[in-house]
Length: 460
Image (cartoon, rainbow, N blue to C red; front, side, top):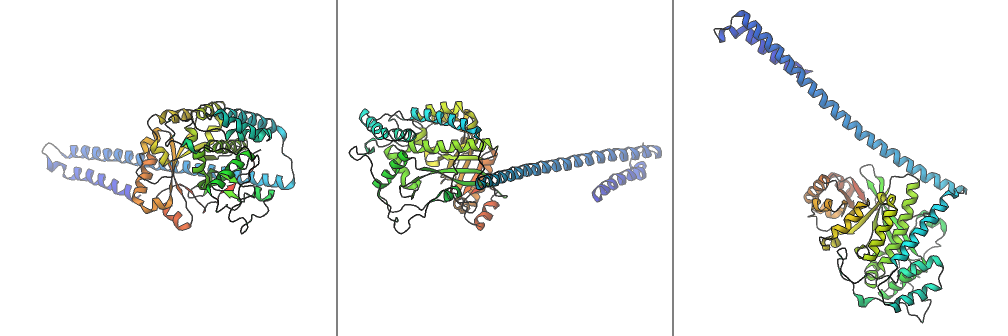
């Protein structure tokens, strides 16, 4: 009101000045002309004042409307989160009360298994020598039909020809096979087997998502034997860790990891086996099982209409295999509904090693609706335009790396936002780190502060 009153007094004073002093300013202005000019100044000032007031009102209403839209979005997110929590509670009550679920989804599960079996059978076509393939078939012949698929995957070794998504060549001389004289090899027990024997891993613990202890002190040969047995016996678990939206800490995404279990119930971490699996040609089989688990989980989420997406760590060697890539694209083309909840994650080291033609392969996946995430970022000098051109929608960086160079972190955040790429702060372990992350304007984070990795519930 004071502002508008001041504006009115200004043009009213101007009109009064014209009325009083106009005849003395120019000889042609008499008293009657001065009255006309004063009225014109007053009327013109009033019109300009009205335009200014309307523009200010429209700006205020536009800002109010924008804030209401933001509040509506937050309310919808809150409603979605509440529905998700109620669904989890309902499922827990049904499980506790022994209420049987409808058998309507059995046919869907059977159809899904058939599709996945067909896919894995095609992926299992290997470039190994016939002798090695025959040995794999002999090892699988004594296993049940469900285990035979994973045993045949073990025979799958990436082809030797170069591929843009394969950053480093695999040592072909490093491939090993199971000794045919020992049909049931036993993996050595971990060094901590006696000191930290896992407690009774019953079904209740599995449903609660409790992770078994990590096997320590295993050499490379023992880890490889554990990996082979885990593939044969279907002992590859899907582990999930939440990724939350800030500042509400709502769980919007989950990152998927694979864990191998020993026969004694211990757990083998990816950092223990991933390099050996890549060297020995087992990583494609492990990634296959991870994809199967993740796809089954996505189907379950879609049946419940939950708004959740999943980051899936897939080795570039796996997507770099031409046979795998072609069959995988065929599978996604016939199951396009899966792609909207699936995000493939690649480390920065592999991304930097790709050549220009890698964009063609990524484009094929992007055309199916897949999104990509850049992980393991060490160098903050990232080109957001290049990432956006390759359909990368997420960049994950450790919180300590962002906080060590806050100015670079702010510039990177601004550049990524410009291209619609979301920055995820990893390894946020305490409240102090969270406060600093929020100061950088980051709206997505992952770490033990928001939830530790837990075993996924069976998606059947």
